[in-house]
Length: 96
Image (tube, rainbow, N blue to C red; front, side, top):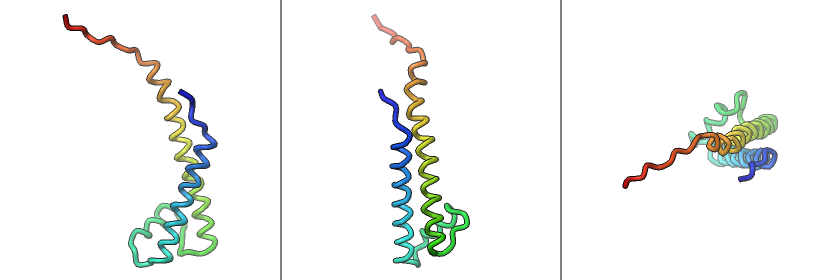
């Protein structure tokens, strides 16, 4: 089994988080009465109503969140086979 590369996974997760963020902002602009958009200021501390500065701040923050999630995921994904390999295997009990 090959190891999962950090850089590819980090950039893919970063782009996914940024697309989801941009869709949330677009939905917020299209339907401001929806309650789900109250999550944005919670996830991104200091986030205000949509301005250019806060939009860029959200993009950068979602990029950083994506990188953190990818780093943790790849670390454990690559570590798991090594941990399993160190566990001694027990032979099954044969019934005669």
